[in-house]
Length: 296
Image (cartoon, rainbow, N blue to C red):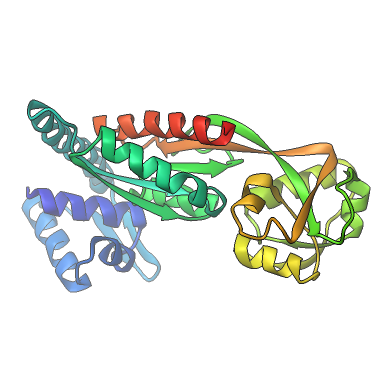
């Protein structure tokens, strides 16, 4: 078996589609299909069942997927061990950051990564928590910072901190004041679409109080969302970090909510594949940088 064929097979199996896998792997779809077919011919069994919606694994494919993940991991570990002989960890780490934290963490995280893992390469991607969880499962991300995730057997999470959420309104010369959930329910809310983590926290808190949100606009970008708030199109509920890194802190005012709402920030990795030494080092580095930066 060829290692590239195993890598291709794992990606197709995890993504459930030749089309999506060809994009991730940057290989033409016919060439990808040909390599998978060669693998099936060599093993004398079909590994994938093609259908109109993508592909599913046969029983033989499920067995091969488990072995292929282990084989590819061992190959990566071998590369790392050889790198350690030279005195440094090697390999590539793909990290996912939510937009509200990317501006705060990207520079210190990259600087620390270069200092401590000079032989390794780093890829940073911004994304919403739900999207990043999917990317962890598919292997496009190795580590991600996510908000208020729902439990999943495919994802391992480690809580890092809880961020208080505030009602964000235009600055009209009025000092910040506590706002009740009853008041929040009456205000036109500009909010991300489901299943955004912060939205789920807000809706759950209002539902527990017997209330429903008055949703004026749904939008999935923090910057555009705050642009609308600054234009007095409604209010938003976000963390102070999201406001302070938006460049609009001088136009908007955060008001505390009573009782307080919190969004939990967690460090997430895939439960489907073991982490390499380089990825483990990156996890510890992220924990350190997040603790230091958020405290500051």
